Length: 428
Image (cartoon, rainbow, N blue to C red; front, side, top):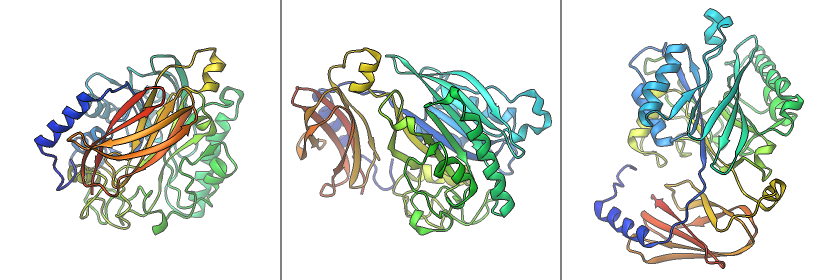
């Protein structure tokens, strides 16, 4: 719950009454992707962070989780068994342990992938070796109940620090990734490369190799000089603390965009798996904590408990983004399938939201679309005429600036009699 905005039982009961009275169509499942440098676990000093990890990941509810700075087998298994499988008992698995040939250099492979087994099958795992660290390449089969698609995920931790040599080594690591996927096997493949890249600016060799002249795109298109630059305060991920708390984490406050989710263009082409790029978020960054502790004062994007957990768990913020398997006229024709009837609300982000949220929906045919917002008493408080909307995944912004904090029901209907609903929480 958000600070100083506890919802009363009466409000919740009223909302349930409205929700039950409204026709609700099943929504397409989204997959939440998350990457997070969890800070030298389990070799760090100080108290165990496992409870803090649980608090953060329970708030995020990922389906695919990539963790960096997991330093040994025990740490990898503890996050699996004492964090993820506590939040969702028996639902999680992890990538295989590192090739035994690494021996005592296990620390060179500190990046690991965790996944929910009811939606995802791990088909293969490979290591991409460099002189600094190894990166893990996982081939995943994503099943949405109507078929499956292949997603490749690379999770890595590039060289730290800001000397000329450090930048060159990051560039070499990035080149190793590009070399690995520049083969016919990965032609037009849907690939995510995520992790702690330790990049200070988009002028570095690694960014040039990966994005400027490379196969990846930045989902939020925010290339620039990120270090200590207030223009990027809403996407900074490191450091969550101004000063040391005794666990070896970096200090100085939130002023670097070290952590990234990059993707190939195939994740935004209307076929198979799609990235909902409007859901990309440095989790817990409300844009108001530049050069400060993440839990200082009011954090308008997460609760007090989550803000405190982010502060103590790691010196990095997680980065999240949602994925869907869309149905469009082109993709179903390619597979020789019929267009489904009805439509779905895929996502509303952010939610909870302050004034404006983006609604993502999927339509099977060109439709006249009408959106309405109801309060917990069932009164219509807002309506939006979207007009004729083309089939496929579409987005629109919903502004509720004139409304007060509370729970609302969004209902979207088409001229074909289709209705979909979603709960929204407005926080001032």
